[in-house]
Amino acid sequence: MKEKPTTKLCKHCKSEIPYGAKVCPKCRKKQSSKLKWGIIIFLIICIIGASNGGNNDESAKMSNQNNGNEKNRTEKSETKNGNNQTVFKVGETAEYKDVQLTLINYEESVGNDWGKPEDGKIFVFPEIEIYNNSDREISISSMASFECYVDDYKSDFSSNAFMAISTEDGKQQLDGSVAPGKKMKGVLGIEVPTDWNIIEIYYKDNVWLDSNFSFKIER
Image (cartoon, rainbow, N blue to C red; front, side, top):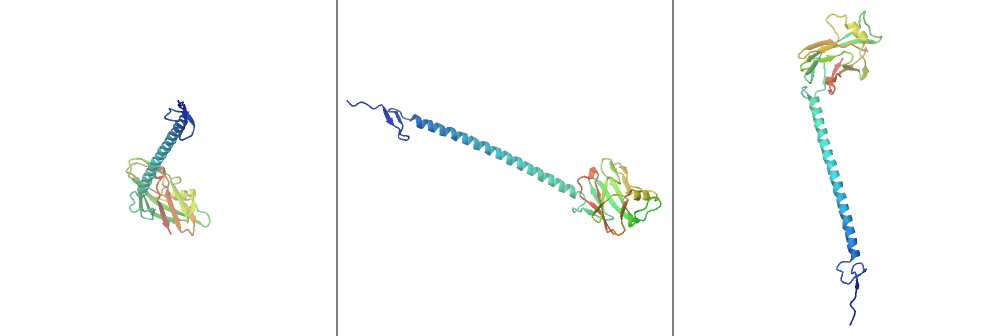
């Protein structure tokens, strides 16, 4: 009688396995290993996808926020000046955050015994009215609240000009606090070359920190 075989060869890996085995132990081990790595790779892909999705959401959120901020800045710059006007001339009023500035006029001066300009220069006194239509008190300083450029060159306000104007009847510096609903009118003192052409004045108080307008005086 022929003896029954006890082993056989695996059809896939050709390894010798028990005759009655339905699954090759080596092939099962390889399949388990492949399945394990497949699961690990799948989880890694899911984690990366979730991370990128979160970043995209955050980027979209930041983009929307930036767009919102940009929109707010645009709305602020438009304020109540109507048609995005940013440069104002003599007689015109700039309004921002319920505070109005009007460049009433300006005059030139050679000074007086109290203050005289340097040789080749003259004083220019822009007269400005401020109306505080807000619900808070605001502070104004001739020297600190304004920035001036003469023919594109930065120009500091002149103490000699302020000394000269302080002795003129009906003239005062633009300094002090303005209560809600009240007004202030005064002048700035600028020492400029006698052949000046353009003076630009910017308001830089904290209340107006993000304003973008200027007053422009053309000779």
